[in-house]
Image (cartoon, rainbow, N blue to C red; front, side, top):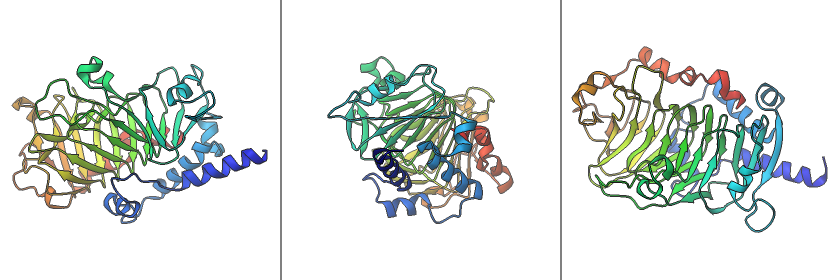
Length: 364
């Protein structure tokens, strides 16, 4: 390894080791709000975090041999070189890629619409910090549908992002507006993971469309249905901020249509912000969302959950809470068709088996 390679490698090690936090919360505040440091993680949690940090650099043999072997790093440089945009870097990854390719993205605002297609698996976006912002401003009406409004769309398997901000700059719409959905990120590739990332938008910020996903220490901001889709996902120690006005907001709109394994689990998250919002609305007839050990500010509507104005869904959805705290967690007035879980009932949702993590997460 030459001197230049050693310098680059050392810089990357430092960048991965440091948790960069965007302006919405200071580093200290984020650790407190998201529960970092307040609850001791399991040994598997700690092992996973260590392995992920090594994997992004391609230096851990266990991970690189059992999943995608070590590939190359592509550096985005807005001023010079062949890869002046993130999309140009993605385009440089060969179709049918079988190696872990790291795309390093320095701080800055990248005004571009990005697609990681299904044909290009095992890509990592390693941002210098959450000051690296990937942003566009489409709405559903402008782009030809909610899915197409996404500023960044991930359709490939095994995608990882570290310390990136994904944003949609479309203005927040009033309640009931038509065609104003504006997605910051759409993820529909299987086995995706996001660490210390920010997702900024208003209506329909994060389209967790399909596949198994893991979000850790992320910041998610929106107003209406701002985590939505039919993904099978765990959101752990995330900070969720509502910018809703009045009573038109909702955090989730999960779209499970049958008794499948999909659903959203929020574990040890913090919910704060403005408005008077629902925890979830039943976009799908069998919508499934569970909030576990979350701290909820006084912005949650007492009823908590909404049946999409279809009372039949009250019998088929699975909406539950376990050991949540804060004024928003007060169960007085909650929808009687929602559930309070015991420790035994909550266990399957607190286990990484919910997303089959031990089959893939240590090796993405």
